[in-house]
Amino acid sequence: MSQSFFPSAQPGILHHYSDRLATFEYSSTLPPGIDKPHSLLFIGGLSDGLFSVPFINDLAAALESSPWSVFFVLLSSSYSGWGVGSLGQDVEEIGQCVEYVRKYKAAQNPTRSESPKVVIMGHSTGSQDVLHYLYSPKPSTAESTGSGRPVVDGAILQSPVSDREHLIFEIKSGSSQGSPQILAKLFDELVSLAKNNVKAGNTETILPLSMTAKIGFSDTVPMNSRRFLSLTSPDSPDNPLEDDLFSSDLSDERLRQTFGKIGSRGLLRASLLVLPGDADQYVPDWVNKEQLLERWKVITKDGAGRDDIWDANSGLVPGATHSPSGPDQEEPKKELVSRVKIYLTNLEKAA
Image (cartoon, rainbow, N blue to C red; front, side, top):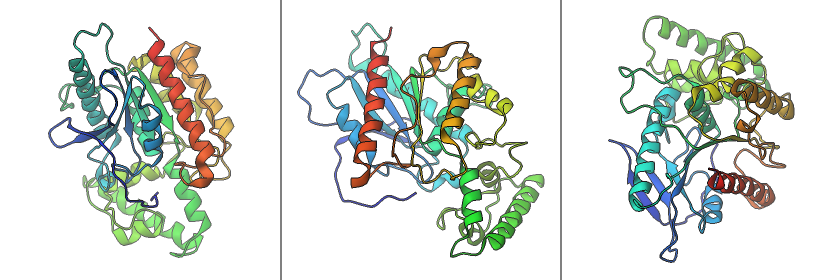
């Protein structure tokens, strides 16, 4: 999901939040005395890195004079790292960043009585990270390299889409790489190869780039057998793997294990804001977006035992593509930014 490149410069602060990872805090020359105790941590999708999601500039500008700072979180899986990454690794690193940012903001104003608020916002596959952060069991001390996952004050899923359903659509549509029949055969070969690797204990074995590129994945990103199977989840919907969180054919039981666990895990203090794009080009035509969103809503609320866990501003963003940018996306982009801003303002006012 590449974006058009426009040379630009963005002022800010680059923070080193762990041994090898950084987060960029959008900043500007604000007048002295403006207090910004709260933080929005943005997590990009596959192949994303600093400045690869243009609408974040608009969001940062809209929050410039507010008490909220915007951070872009770099993970091990950012840029080309996603082919060998995992949601578990991502949320471990996100947890480290949450902890760092909260301590950093507290140190800026040690006399402040209220604790700095932190919200995590996922874009595209970053939404899988956010949902995984909120619903999955915390790892044991032996499995965790950090301090685990701190509680967050809010969470946002922006353009949550199914990588599996998008791939199915790409294969059925055919491409310059081959007909639907050829692509389906190639996919089956890749699944067989990946499963054999995993069965033999070679989960990190890289699949042939010439094959994965032909069915729609990046032609520059190596992908290991484990992540390929997780993203494509070939045995879904009966046996969905880690990355298959947003497919429309998943059972209510599967959704109860994911969306339905958000409330009981206790990692989200306030509400969940969910903002799919009404014109998201990565969602196949056969998916009923409104119906799917309603299923997520009902199961999230039922699992938590409270209605307010699902934010009232959740809903399809009219006319919005996957990552709103360009002249024809000005209104959807404004709507997206407005809903996020309202959500943060409400959160800020909450006790």
